[in-house]
Length: 380
Ligand SMILES: NC(=O)C1=CN([C@@H]2O[C@H](COP(=O)(O)OP(=O)(O)OC[C@H]3O[C@@H](n4cnc5c(N)ncnc54)[C@H](O)[C@@H]3O)[C@@H](O)[C@H]2O)C=CC1
Ligand SMILES: C[C@@H](CO)CCC[C@@H](C)[C@H]1CC[C@H]2[C@@H]3[C@H](O)CC4=CC(=O)CC[C@]4(C)[C@H]3CC[C@]12C
Image (cartoon, rainbow, N blue to C red; front, side, top):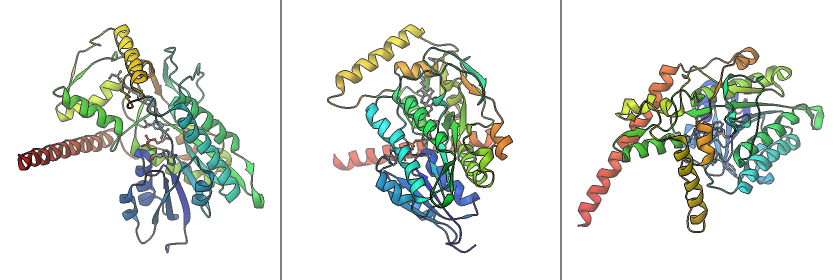
């Protein structure tokens, strides 16, 4: 296929953790495309060099909450994978901003699809549109049909739920020229893998405490996790099959899953960190839940007191504690049944890749320290 004869895909948020894996996945495994438009507020110029003689990677700087930016990016495209989002459960950004990006941004993508005649939209939703809720209702090995007491108060899950509803309701919309808009929504559980910012934070925290991690969550609390490469693979397959079987995938939601083991959030992270010399202190939580909750409340108070001076957004707050302390795991094969999804990466491969990446962080940290030390020496 010569460049230019294939389809044009748009990946919103394509410079992010999932987005950048998705761009690479499309380049490697999607033969029907000639251009990938990477639409993002913060461009990663390194993605531009991924262009090859078959597929052009075109970086487009823009704000998803500005309709004109989105309309321009989608003009002449064939399909949109919409992953752009403000992923914040720590109070880093105001609720209004989260809503502006995650809900208004999604409205803009849908509006632009209709105006530009883009027929296919795959939306990156989240497990959070379901739960866990803050009442501690466990979601144990659930699927897309499992009844659950959904209760949202936090801006992020609220925004993802509103956006997903808009996307699903838009499925089947008639567009100019008699074309139809087809949409589907993918719900990843906690994504891990190369480039995961939160893992970097846990790693840095552990380095500061002599590679010791202190258990805070009971080991019996399972949290669903899925490798970023498999999430990207599922998006690619959903995008491909939505075009071939729109009546099957259109208007559907799919949890993203693979063979990653069911473990507590902390124990799952230790699958990687223990290979880097870290150890978990305590076979059960070192402090009682009420003390953790008081600490979480104190963090919220400090965030409020300090917010005029700087953004204090520690990992632990009442919401993240509630989520971490409530089982949420999925067991489903809906994506396999509907569009033949099977994980591209087995657990052992996903684990190996993630460990290799974490070890590369250590090399980088050491190099920075060495440069710092040399730098200090030179300045003495
Ligand atoms: N990280 C996780 O564990 C999970 C993430 N998700 C979803 O996956 C998607 C990707 O998440 P991550 O890769 O983790 O986040 P990320 O923060 O690494 O990537 C999001 C991207 O969106 C871009 N973006 C933010 N605001 C924008 C705006 N106004 N205009 C244009 N681009 C904008 C950011 O620059 C970033 O590149 C999101 O939709 C998120 O809700 C779902 C489940 C779990
Ligand atoms: C109590 C702490 C001591 O170690 C552990 C804190 C862990 C939490 C920061 C994480 C536990 C569960 C995570 C969330 C979950 O994976 C679902 C998510 C889906 C998304 O769409 C975005 C991220 C997140 C909300 C994720 C955020 C971090 C946790 C709360």
